[in-house]
Image 1 (cartoon, rainbow, N blue to C red):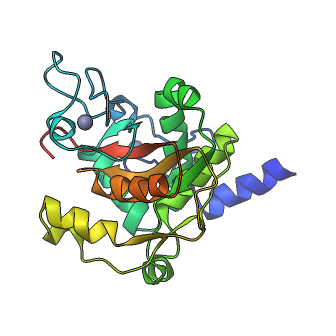
Image 2 (spheres, protein in one colour; image 1 turned 90 degrees about the horizontal axis):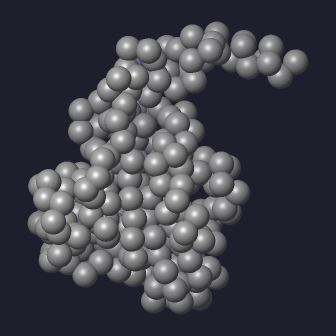
Length: 239
Ligand SMILES: [Zn+2]
Ligand SMILES: [Zn+2]
């Protein structure tokens, strides 16, 4: 019965290729045949802190992580924020393709399973969006990815622990230090302390790391011992 219903759902609302957005046939799960060769995980060498792909294998950390003291412990993303993956995440974020979340969560898990197991995460916390933005967009893309990851791993997701309290200026308009200041003020905890020892922050894109850092700082100040992150895409070393 469920199978029949899901077939009807596929006719009415066909699933789409995560990379090119073409409707998929019944048997194809996330990526069409044409796009499969374009699907590539980030390859080593990568930064031991943020997971960015690096050109120089002789150093342990990327340019950014050698310069900045991040609040988070470590993190990673399976894909480079370029080309078809960049377009995919833009559709996911702004054009109603929330359904991609299930593919992204599978990719995060396939790519980072060893690390996630090693980190022994107690809870997954998505980066929140401001209430007004949530109302306009209808969903928080980071929360969709976090929930899908929670469904695959069994690690509980806590969507309510962190909220976005002010509508910050668009990060694009600011330089790096302004971005950090702007963001540290943007998040707040809804509890007096963090009820988890080891937290995984989930977000869509990691570029300078300032968003993840702002949430990590908050959680650590509230008592979390270790804060890690997993994003869908990460910028190159030149970000
Ligand atoms: Zn495709
Ligand atoms: Zn790094």
